[in-house]
Picture 1 (cartoon, one colour):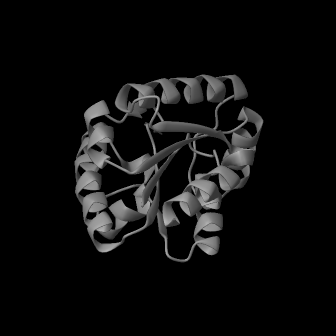
Picture 2 (cartoon, rainbow, N blue to C red):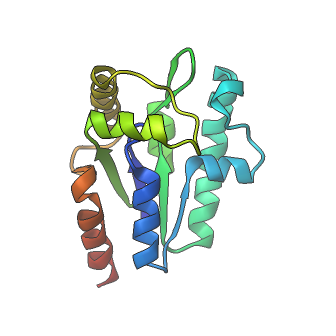
Length: 175
């Protein structure tokens, strides 16, 4: 089963992926950035322009399709919106559709948790914006994903319930 995790930067996708893979070792878990890095694409937000972001999305579709052929079970962290220092890049609806994951989850985290992660996780470069801006961005990202995927395919889960609900879906898929 191929699971796509969406959420704004700092919503907890990476932590969740690590937890899910540790309890489900038959799954390969990674981020879209890792997939892009593996094929030599630039991912540093400070060094990337909109042309590179567009190319990255096309390359990501190819890399994800290959990953799914090689691995029966994957959990991959994606973004509907990529925040750069100067703008927001909305992943084209058609690019999102071409990913074709089996299950799609949107991690809806509290804006104060997102802001905390953005400020304290020094392993990633993330834009620092207000809690109100985070809430608006999350709302817009969810609406954007709803345009790409039907509401019956898109599972919206809170950060606190995500592990339990996704684990349940994984276990159901094992039957």
